[in-house]
Image 1 (cartoon, helix red, strand yellow):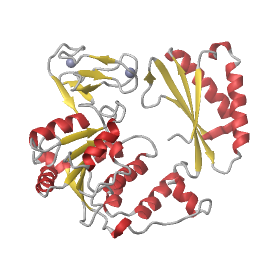
Image 2 (cartoon, helix red, strand yellow):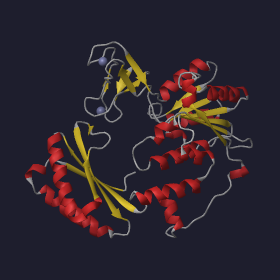
Image 3 (cartoon, protein in one colour):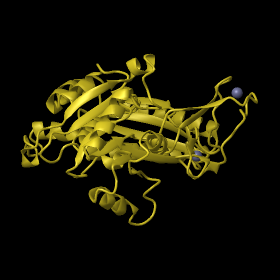
Image 4 (cartoon, protein in one colour):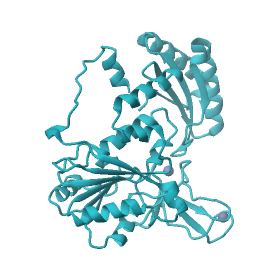
Length: 373
Ligand SMILES: [Zn+2]
Ligand SMILES: [Zn+2]
C-alpha cells in the first residue's frame, strides 16, 4: 500500500508489469465455500471435497500441488469440552500449539515445551478436543487420503537444519515430491513449471487478524501463493477455502484486481488515520510486574498527550499481553505523515528521559517501533 502510494504520488518511479513472464495466463481462481461444506458435512478432515477432487485430478495428470496454511504445528488449540479450559504457556499469555512429531505442546513465543495433557486442569474432565489446524496436521491427514503421494512440509520446523530448505526445494524441483505443504515460506519466488494446483486452506485465518495490515497481507499472500500455479504453458488453478466467499478482499484476489484492492483499501487507511497518510509509532512498555507496567504506561501516555494531544491512543494491552514473563502495555501515536521526523523524535526522547528520571520507572523497558510491520 505504502509503496504504491509513493509511486502514485511521484516519490518513487513507477514501472508496471502487465504481463507474466513468457506470456503465461494468470491462474484460474475458485473458492471452496467452507460454510456450505460444513453444513453439508462434505468435509474430509479440514479439506473440502472440491479441493480433494482437484488434488486427485492433478495427481492423476502427474502434476504437482502446493498447499498453503500460515500456521505451523499440528493443532493450535486444545480445549476442554466441558469448561473451555486450554493449556497455556507458563511464561506467555498464549495457548500452546501441539506438535505431533515431538508429541509436545510448544509455545511459539518462547522456548517453553510441555507434554500433552489428557485431563483438564480446571475441571478434571478427560474430554479435551483439538481445534484449528497447522501444516503438520495437513501433512498427516493428506497422507491418509492420498497414501501413494509423496508429501513434504516446508515450514520453520522442517527447515531448522542447515540446507534443509534448499534440499526440500531441490526435491520438489526434481519431482520427488508431489504435494508441498507450507507456511508463507511457499508464497514467494518459487518457480516450478509442473505446479498445476495451489490450495489456500484457510483464508479466514489471515483476514481475521486484528492489525491494520491484515487485508493488505491477506491480499498479498493469496496473490503471491496463487502466482505459484501454472508457470509453464498450461493455465494453473487456485482454490481458496473460505467461510466468506463474498469477502471483498477475496473477490479482488479472485479477479486479480490489484488496483481495485488498492483503491478500496487506501480510503480505509485515510479514514482511520493509518499509513501512508499517518505514521504509526508504537511505544511498548515491558515489566515483569503487571502493576508497574500499568502505572508506568499511564504516566507516559499522560505526558505524551500533553504534547501530541489526540494523536495518542492507549495505553492498551497488545494481543499477546505477556511474553517471556514480561507484561506488555502499548501506547500508539498516529502522526501526520508530513510532520518533521527529527522534531518528533526529539520530543519523544525528551519525554522518555523525563519518564526515566522517576525511580519507579527505572526497571521498565521501553521499546519504540516506527511504522511497525
Ligand atoms: Zn511462551
Ligand atoms: Zn474442563
